[in-house]
Length: 210
Image 1 (cartoon, rainbow, N blue to C red):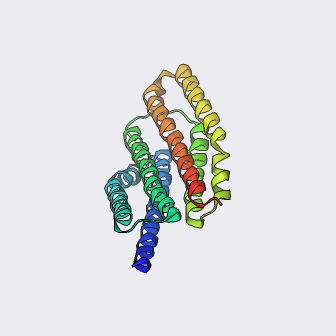
Image 2: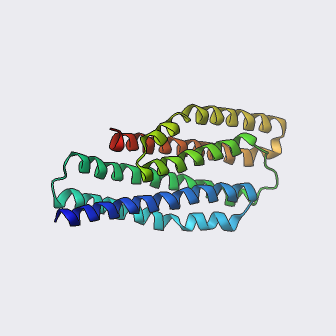
Image 3: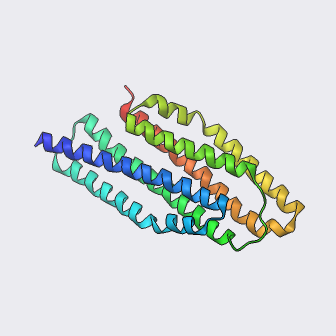
């Protein structure tokens, strides 16, 4: 029974990793769609949400079953609790990707939009943090999780500078206000992706740090 239990534990962990890989791809695709005015790519991100959310719910059910079947020892309990929390944070990051994709679709109809270097920098930084947080979980490496956490201030700086840049653009050219307003929400969603990456990193440290 213990062998079957550990096999189920490993299968659930692999499901969390698949969820993470799909979500990293969704965040990357959503910003790429925004940047390239690719409404069809954005629509695919939106359409993929239900599948990812269903995976998250299946992981939750599997974790509950793991807790119910046997009394897990301390390390197993941390692992199951970690999977539950990490799956939730990954799923929320995917929710933000869908929001960004929806903005990409609506921006396709707006002729004027401001250029925003800071938005691209924030997207790159947040996506990098999320990718590394998932890698830290995959490799069971608290050191990589520490590197994710060390970049939290960078996200905050880019978020604030991005807001300021968009405010300046709107003040200089009122025609970009509709698009800039939507991009302000995108900044917020990208910043939250970074927050979720930090949550995952903290959980990796909690589960795997000696």
